[in-house]
Length: 317
Figure 1 (spheres, rainbow, N blue to C red):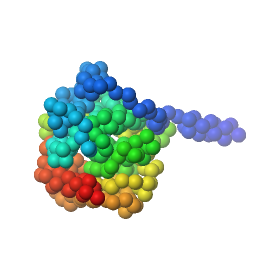
Figure 2: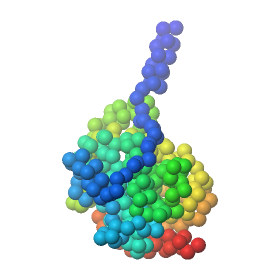
Figure 3: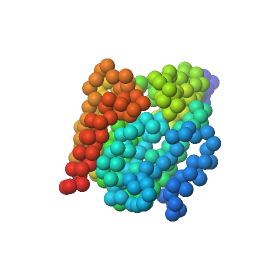
Figure 4: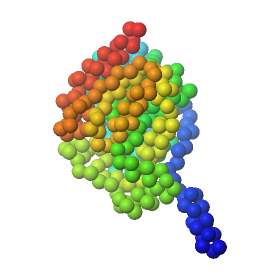
């Protein structure tokens, strides 16, 4: 009897253990007239932001700073910054004569230890702010998301507060599930503690080059992985068939970071207009970050051309 009670108590303690917070409460951001000044002031509150990682509006006309028919929102991936895909998103926006806002997700683009300050709720509120800014700089919005930024973009696009604002979704290597199934441990009670016991307090990967070292967190606290997995959990609760706007997806079947099979499943279940671009190169240096001067410059132009064509066709419907 004592053993049974002990096991029951142990089960309760395990079940009630700490786990990643999936708090999705957010408020629609109220913005002042001067958006550039607002971003400068709010970003200055973090003293360790990497130069070039700040939240930033790239105006089609930097002098007039006028609203454009379309505005883009760029949501970067986990442990990365807006530099991961440069110059692709900006080139797309420029060719379509559009403004673009690049956010910086909480905890990212700072010191390695700051990565632990990221949270599902923080990222959701970053997305809410991004959508408010997009509404100010464009008549309609297109979300571009890379990896976990695509997870966040998918969740955002399905919220009633933003759904009617969005014309299309552009996803690069969307994170609908990580490659390593053991990562699901992070969603269990005591997930952070279990992961730290297995991996250690920090997770580290060698940078490919100096720009990679600068604009990614190549070493960060293991527990920083929890909100990434939490964001994946949230977005995968939303069926692909719920999409109401056209979707462009770029991915590699050899992706070594996210599960390409889950991307393929998502594509099959989409019921809206879609364009899929596959980078089928098993020898590529990066199988996950498929664009951008830092890791995959050879793919930039073909992706720019494909996305511009995809969106241009939508505009002429």
